[in-house]
Image 1 (cartoon, protein in one colour):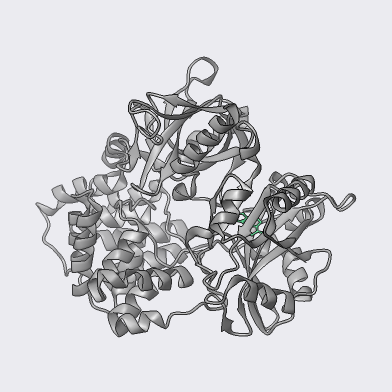
Image 2 (spheres, helix red, strand yellow):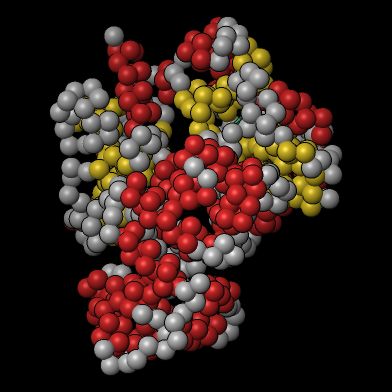
Length: 585
Ligand code: AMP
């Protein structure tokens, strides 16, 4: 298959912002693509080389990519760098310089998708001494055989800036339309949620159709997408929704871990499917001791504990472990943790995702012998609001965030990758004014003044609205940052910089800088108010106003485990606003 076919599709995708049109363009392309190569095409469309859980990532430094562009086009580095300052996008730079080159040079042989993909793979894999020059050479060679459009997308994908505006779920829609029908979308989405591998789903569909995809099951050492919870504000509401009776568990405040255990080996994955095995050798050893099964996938929340008092410590203590490559052993001693298991997704090779919750819990209990590192979550089956309230108080007293309600109905299956009412979180903020935190995504920033000159003065923060797939602004965040964090922000956000507002960001404010909605910050506010300038739930309470968070403060916690779309939803803010009102009345 020629790389041009894929690039033509990208050009068409870039020309539209309608999700429906994107779906049609992709579906039509998927049908045309060679089934043996569709996997590569899907990963590249996602801006990556492999599924999320494979650690090898694209992301060549701009500097190196620009070097290769300069070399392959013959444009020279000063010109390329100047264009980069102007355009801010290596893809556009490549497009411009290759267009002028093509007027004087003849095309060489056309690029195939396989060659493009394999070269990108070789670049991503190159490491060690001399690897930088090697990467530049590989890319330059590839670019010298590329058309301007091909060079544009190669330069974007290699620098981690694909940004076609195509969401994972749009690719899922398109795959269903291309190889089955719209009605079969759920089966396709399920296959993605249990495998976390869109390339595999595409290839299976293209080769074996819908039946093939229905056969995709949970597998050890391939993390599945986490099941998520809805939120409600009173025990009465929760019990009513759950049919009068359900399980309640402590809601621990730590890091979610998905543990894959097979023949004595243990691997740990985060909620975002990153592998965390190396950061938690103590948890790995604990699971080896505590879990008695040939193979298993179990899930739990990992919480820092004070070994002297047995009390939980603030969540921040676990974050010392995240992203650490060195000093893990010191971290294990300085910040001991305990894993509270709450689900069993696979036991001795059997996929339990279709089993009701209590059956999965029984499976979990049957294979775990708890000890000081691995425990089972506190759980109770309750049916009266008073009992729930009492259990909630116990949870708070024991340092938890609140409770997780879990349906025990026949249909209480493990819904990978889904947020629904089978799990409902009940957190403390609904009991009082806005004392709890929300997770907001950075969509823009304002230039700093005075002491903050040259840095960001404030960030424009947004909630996520799943109904419209947009990010709605809810506050301007300027406090709670220490000097080091303030100084580090421009660098942290450098790769997310956009020339204009992201098309999914709904804002009435003009920020000085705009970003890809990716970085999620935990924010504490004093209260939620109506505001004419913020777009969160605009019109929901009053036709001319949205909702805003007053006196927001960064808590110091970057929610690295969340993506833009995992931010607090606009509807959650609305529910919090309404709960406040109830309190005031
Ligand atoms: P939130 O991050 O506020 O959306 O709440 C959902 C998270 O709570 C899950 O992703 C888990 O990391 C965490 N959690 C803590 N305790 C439990 C529990 N008993 N059952 C399920 N999730 C839990």
